[in-house]
Image (cartoon, rainbow, N blue to C red; front, side, top):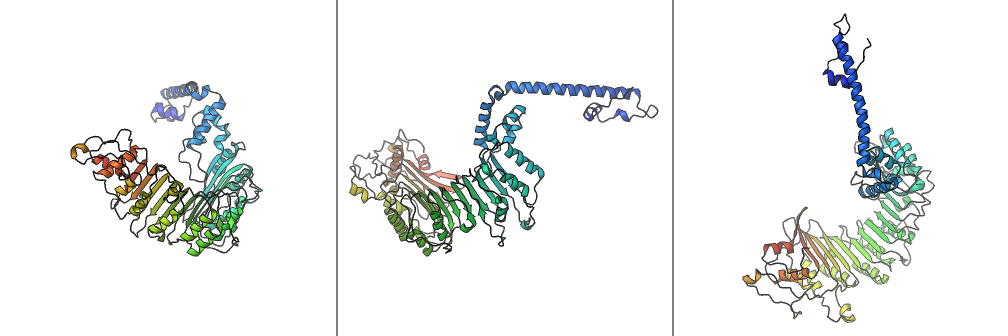
Length: 574
């Protein structure tokens, strides 16, 4: 009789590891019981295969019945996939890798056959591509996956981030030229919409070679990897980019970047010299938002504008001097006229550059009504002088949003917090506002105030803080509350809110003390009652003490909890 050999799975399952085919009891051949057992195992294996096939078919029917996407048109299901993908997966082209891989098109396609068919026919799922590449090794599967991914995008606008991994053990001199990968991405240059390159600069020429243009490109970011190969003098040249709007570049000379500047509206360029900044503003007449972190000295590569560079479009300007002298900053400030400037942000380095007079001359010459003003300076900075800060702000009465940050440093100087609060409290708007009163006022248009300080050297004057909004001496209708214990345990009467600053509705102060210094809890006195009344009037008033990275205390709430004072009606916890 013929011998039916069962599958390995069935043999292992039914014979418990014993193989009856190996029996030799019948003249060197399997005995009859073993032959019968072999045949039975084969029959069981075939039956099991039949049942598994039936189960797969039944499971497919169950999936189709219970899958909500199986009962909607493919177009609707595709829209659902697209929305989910963009909300959970699509990376910021100027940020890091996707925070979540839940919406990855590959993950969606792995659920079932129906989902896979929908995903493969939805090109919107394949327009964001984030490639982590090791230049030493380029596995074929890597290239095949990229090719399939781009092929499914159906020539829609692409968001591409190409990032190279590098460790100190690897030698860039021995890298394997990724010609196939570069060629594959270059083929889709007509559909680039956002391009983020995190790679060594000596790859630029190989990557961008033969690219005649990128007509849909709107966002470009170049983040060179510092491999200290000074013999390479890279040039990134990309012409015919009429739609280019946003540019983000780090650690490159301006002469190394050749692009179309005329339509740019937003730029962040790190480590530029003063003359390079002026040249960028000259090349980009439509720029609206400019950030220049870690400004360096004047390289004298480009000629300075004479007498001024007038830029009529710029509204947002962020400056962060690093290795910059006072003379360099004077050159920058004294050559500019910015009539449309509204937002100005200044983060000082650790070299103590001030140049207040030149900065104020820029604002005066530009006649620009600054509405948003931000200062972030180290505690040892010369700019941290109280009179200097007041001098700047007194010349900018149009400010509506003010942010002051004293950055952490080992050198601690006397805090100007209370002095500044007293100056803010000196503002006294009359019930019938006049042009004269507003002209003499300090920050009369202020709507939002953000204050942040590390290692405060003095306790906060809660009375000065309350005086910014409310002065009981000036307010004849102030409710007087006695200090006896019985009344303090009752609910707090609603304090009449004398609004000395009608526009100031957001006030936040944050002190990073690490448990050593900073504001002490408010005692049970009139100051706490006044602060509660100010909050009840709708002001977002927050005084925060950061003890550790995740331990933040709301000083007003903490003081209320430690006291027997109750909140008045309408007062909500901020």
